[in-house]
Image (cartoon, rainbow, N blue to C red; front, side, top):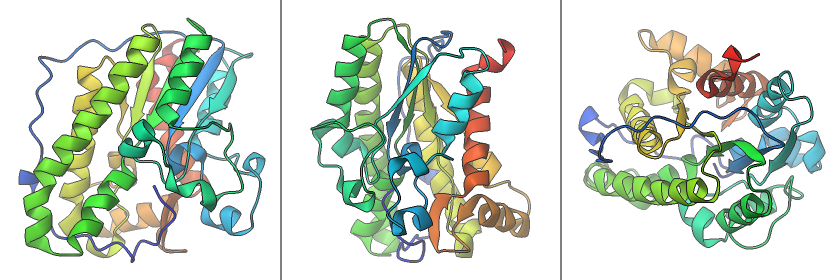
Amino acid sequence: MRRRTVHAVVVCAVSAVWLVPLTFGGTLRPVSSPPQSYYLALGDSIAYGFQPAKANAGLPPSRFNTGYVDVFAARLRTIAPKIRVVNYGCPGESTKTFIHGGCSGRRDVRRLHDVFKGAQLDAALAFLRAHPGQVSPITLSLFGNDLFELLDACKGDFACARARAPRSFAQFASRLTSILKRLRAASPKAEIILTGGWNFNVANLRATDPLFRSLDTTIGRVAAGTKARFADTFPVFNPQGSIAREKARICALTFACSQDDPHPTDAGYRAIAAVVWAASGYKHRS
C-alpha cells in the first residue's frame, strides 16, 4: 500500500458479481519445503512493516521491526534458528512497479530494509539465482496499490468502477501470475506464500466488503494455480455477521480509526503473521 489516508480513497458500493473468473487448468498442490538458510520477503508497505507514526518521525528501517515479516521470522527461528531475513518490501509497490521498477514509496521511508536497484522482481530473481536451494520461504504482499489505482481512476463513479473492475482484476491476476511463475522458475522448491487484503473502509463496510472479498478470491486463485500458498487475512480483519464487531476489529488491527491510515497496528501485523504461519504448514513441524 501507499502512504495515504483512508478517507482520501473513495470506495464505491460493489456486489459479488465483481468476482473475476480465472482459469488456471486446475488447482496445483502447493510446494511444501522446510525453512532454508534465507527467508525472502517481497512486496509493498505491508511487507516493509510500515506504520505512519514511525514514518513521520523519520525512523530508520531497524525501527520498523514489528511487521508481519519480523513476527513470522521469529516463529521460523523456532524451527530454523539460523535463518536470515532478506526484506525487499517497498512502500507504494504495485504489481506493475514490482515488474518494471519505479516503486513510488521509497520517499515515504528513510530507506529500505535491504536496498536494491531497479525492479524488485529483478532483485528477487538475482538473489534466488545467487542462492540456489537456499531460500524458503518466500512471502509476497501485493494488492493495495493495484486496488487504489482502480479506485482513483474512477473518482467515486460507481458505474465506472463497476465497469472497470472485472478487467482491472483480471489484469492484476495476470501480472501476479507472471510474478509467481518467474519466482517459481528461479526457485522450484521454495515455499511461496501470498498474503491477502482487508477492508479498511470503516464507514462503508457492508457496501465495500464484496470488493475486498473479490480481491482476495483473485489472489487465492492465483496462488492455487502457481503452487503457492494463500494466507487469507480477510476473515481475521473483517469478521462477518456484525458490522459493529467488524468495525471494532478493523479499528484494533489497523490505524484506520485512530490515524485515518489503513496500515496495520502491531496487533494487526501479529495477526497477519499468525495467518501466514498457519498457511505455511510449519506449525506442524515446530
